[in-house]
Amino acid sequence: MIVAKNIDGVAVICIDDGKVNAFNFEMFDAVSNALRDAESADAIVFSGRKGVFSAGLDLTIVKDTAERRDALLEKTATLILSLLEYPRPVIAAVTGHAMALGALLLTACDYRIGAEGNFNIGVNATANGIALAPPLLQLLQSRINPRFAHLVILGAEIFDPEGACEAGYLDALAPEISLKTAALDKAKQWAALPRDTFAAHKAIMTAPHIDALRKLGR
Image 1 (cartoon, rainbow, N blue to C red):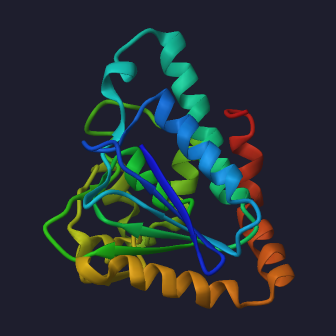
Image 2: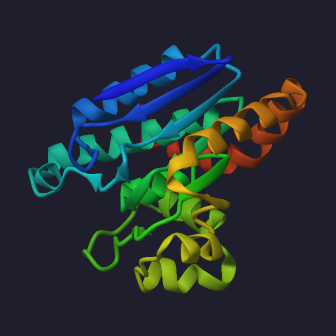
Image 3: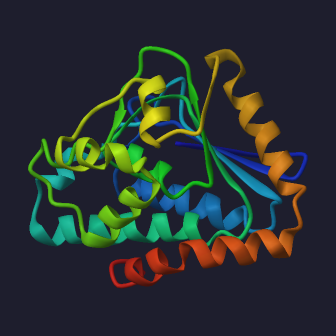
C-alpha cells in the first residue's frame, strides 16, 4: 500500500493500493506512519501509482454511518495537518488522476508537479452533494487561482493537467516518464534553502489553516 524510500536525504512516499488509491482507514494510517518515519528527511516527495494519484475517499465508508463518516473527516484533517506542519518541503508528484480528497491533498503540499496526459483533477464535492468542512474549504480557496474559485468550489469543475495548472491545483507539468525525477530535483532544490527560514515562513503561511484544522483532527 505504501512504498517509501530515502534518496539523497529526500523521503519518497508512494501510495499504491493496486487500484485507485482510495483513502480508507488503513490507507490513512499507512500514509501517516510513513510521514512520521520521514520526520528527519530533508524533504518529502509524495506520489501515487502510475496513472493515479488518488481518487479520494473510499465511498463505501462515506456512505456508511455518521460515526464512521466523522471518523473519516478526523483522519482527513489529521493527514492534511501532517503535511502542513511538516517544516521542510513537501513536493507532490501527481502521477495521474487526482479527484476529491486526492485533489484536496495537493493544497497541503508546497509544490505540485503533474504528469502530462489525459488525467482529471478536481474537488467535486459540490457535484456530489458533499459539504466540505469550512477549514478544508478555506485551505482549497487559499491555493486556487482567485479567478477560478467559483468554478472550482461552486461549479465543481474538473480539469486536465494543463487546466489544473491554470486553476492552481498544480504548479508545473512534466512528461509522465520523467515526473518523479522532476519532483525529486525540485525537492533537493528546495531542501538546499536555509532550513530555519523555510520552516519559519511556512509556519506563518499555514498557521491560519492549522489552527482551524486542529479542531477537526487529532
